[in-house]
Image 1 (cartoon, helix red, strand yellow):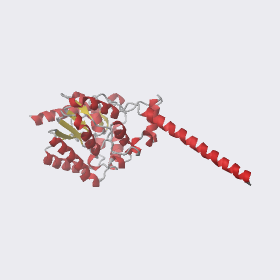
Image 2: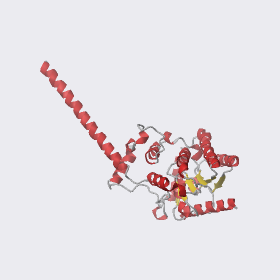
Image 3: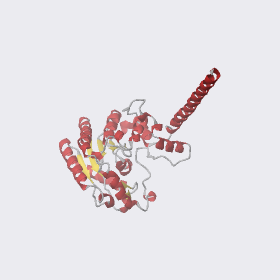
Image 4: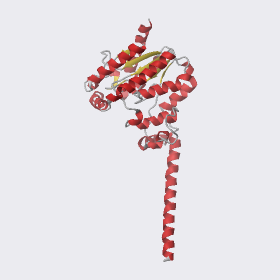
Length: 318
């Protein structure tokens, strides 16, 4: 029986060694991939590097989600402006980014914040289906909200995006979503627009309707109020705006939430002295201004909206 025991023990020992070897290979592959993925240019690294080196030049800062990332052109500002918006960026992260970068922006005079249909009713980013976007803030903008060992500190925590970025780094995938040197989102041009862009309205609206959490209203308003307090303490003018949407989107959302948003933002502005610019149903935007039913084109819609915001600010100043 002794030889048989030794034989079984040796087999188990070899099995454990093989498992450890395989695990080591997988771990090494993930960390090598992690290193490669972190070399891929992305809007978060671009914005962090620019602000770290040029923050003292900024007099106007733009915050918000994809609406302002694609819809407000910092390069058209008469003074030095920077677009710190990101895709699916929620108001709690707007506040964190402002707190994080404000010390490097001693000459900031105006803050532009975008509020859309879902802004006041969003969950915390970590609680949403797009929790993986928080990884970008942790790694590339050094917000340090989460611990070193949390899933938010590693790109490979979310394999679909990790694999896509790795393929891009190895020259096998599509280019990453990019922005220009002052933060404007690129790619939403008329030439790149789908022929079915109007039909996107109902689908996008359905997706946004499913992301309305009315119990989040007071929390998100509190975040905006905190932003307003920061502005007041630092003598910064706060401008809140809502961008236009195409009618195929507007026709499919719950209009009661739009009314609630307008009422809440209006009361907040009355209380804080901030200014609200509402372009949601503006008749001044036509078909060529929209990339899809929920976003503006870079060369037309974003130019028009930026000029309208600038004109409104000029009128307020007068």
